[in-house]
Structure formats: C-alpha cells, structure tokens
Length: 390
Image 1 (tube, helix red, strand yellow):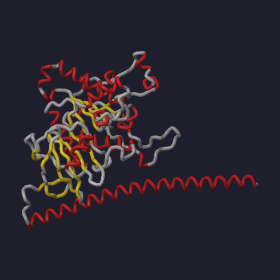
Image 2 (image 1 turned 120 degrees about the vertical axis):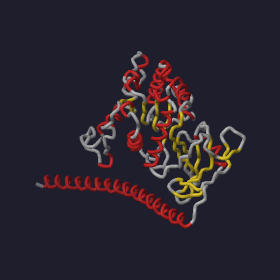
Image 3 (image 1 turned 120 degrees about the horizontal axis):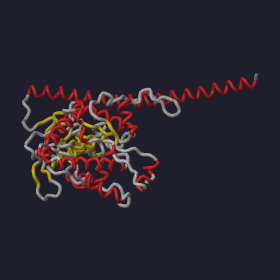
Image 4 (image 1 turned 90 degrees about the vertical axis):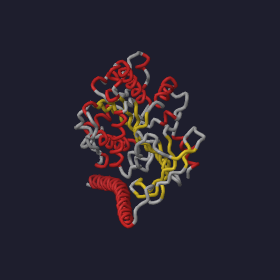
C-alpha cells in the first residue's frame, strides 16, 4: 500500500508539473498574440485619428497642392535634392515614367493592391524575370525578425491575396520550395500531428491557402540524402524542376520564398533558362509582350546573393551563375526596412522610381531620395544614400 501511495503521489506531482508547464506555454503564446493585436489596434487607431484630423483641417482650409498621402497620414511631401547612385549631378526626385507615384502603403490591404497592379503592369510590359520582396510580419519589420516558418506562412498568405485578383489565374503556376511546403499550401496544418502523435498548438495551425487554386501547383527542390550529399551529381541522376514542370501549361511561374538554401535558387535559375529559351524559340509570340512567359520570385531574399553574402569559396561553381542571375531581376514590388535611431525604407512599385523614405514621428514617412535605376545592393543604400539624407 505504501508503494502504491508513493507511486500515486509521483504521478500527481508529474501531472501537476505538466499542467503547469502547459499553462505557462499557453500564457506565453496568449501574451504574444495579445501584444501583436495591441500593436495592430494602436496602429489602426492612430491612422483613424490622423485621418479624422486631416479631414477636419482640410474642410476649414484648403491643403496646398504639394501635400500627399504617405503611410496613411497627411504629411508635407518634401522633395529634397536627390543624388542618383553613380551620378555626380543633383536632381529633383520625380517619376521618370510619366505616371503617378505610388505612396508607401499604409497597411497590407493597400500593399496587396499595389503589388497586384505592379505585377499586372510588368506582365503587360513583357517583363519576363521579376522580383517581389516585402516584410511578411509587418511593414516596418525586416527579414529575420520573425521565426522562419512563421515568415513563410505569412508570405504565402499575402501571396495568395496578390494572386487572387490576377487575370488568367489558371495560367499561373505557383512553385513552393519543397514538397512539404507544397503540402502545407494545399492542405494546411489544421489537425495534422507531429511524428510523436501530438497535434500542434492552435497558434501554429495554418489554413490551406491554395486549396482552391485554379492553376498548377508544384515545388522547386526535393532534398534527400542522395541530393544533399552530392551523389546525384556524381552519378548524373540529379532531378531538376524542369522534369516536373511543363512550361507549356502556363504563362507565369511564381516561385514562393526560395530562400532556404542555394539549391532552391539554383532550380529557379534552371526554370528561368527553360522559359527564356521558350520565349526566344517562339519568335512570333515573343513579339507580343503579354504572350511572353515570365517568372516571378517572391521573398527570395536575392540581395544576399547579389551582395556577396555567401563567401567566394561557398559552392563557387554554383554561386557565380546565381550572382549573375540575381542581378538580372526587375524589381516589381520591393520593400526593405533599415532600422536604427533614424529608420528608413527602400520602396519600389513598378513602374515607379526607386525611392527611399525616412520614417518620421506619428507613423509619417518622407521621401528623401529617388532614382530611375535600381541600386546595386542594399549595402549601397545604407552606406551611400542614408548618411546624406538624414
């Protein structure tokens, strides 16, 4: 009886400890969720109050013509002298494309609409290799601020909204990094259990975002022990994305966040080479811009490859072609934040200029630099542009 009693006490202590651990984990996750919701609510209240203040002031006094809406607030648009990269001449920041300048988005709804319009415009202009880059966790965040899997899920969520209003959805093929990400996009993670048989917490469950997708869905790379070890290349049995994807079935190929490893970007390059050869061989159709096939990379973090983030000896035979490949992208929609005591953001919405905004108090942003040509890298903006325009 004493032995049974001791065993029961041990089980009670263990169960109490387990319940306390689970309760602590649940409280932490709820606190994080509550914190994020408070940030969103404060931002919405701030935008709403500023909008009301702007509307009331505008009703009393006519606003000057050089005012505009940036970041959801009515601020004075200051267009200081802007020095284009590589030029010794100072000019006024303006749109060289003859169209209107897109304001920096106030929220993700505006961002999604702008990105969709930019993507459609690039498609009409015959751009066959484009890049979309945005912070998935918040318009003031930078890549890496959130956990990797969370960023991938949020990227897929925003990407689905961008593509939902595109023309000829059935002609768009979306490619995810690997079969696992493809399965999550089609089926979600709701109710799926881990290998130990335990279902994930509710905060980690994902919806089947592309369950109703009318186009083709596929993946870029299928990592396994044979491919990771390099034996597939030695024996000449390496499978490529071109073995799985028929480019004749679509007009646009969207590669979602191929940033996990070099192999994903390598497969993206192989797919584009196949698309480019198809465009060049089909000469009559290639003359019609909208008939050209195109490839778009979403949140591929290509600047890491452009700026020699990887050392020169890192897979040298693969990195040299990838660096050249990454430098040939057209920036269709681009947002990158520079943090610090005086934060800034690099923004481009095709076909507008590349612009740098300084973040001012009360969530306002001010355009301090613009250029019709793309900067060579984010490092160049940080070292050459931001110090000149505080």
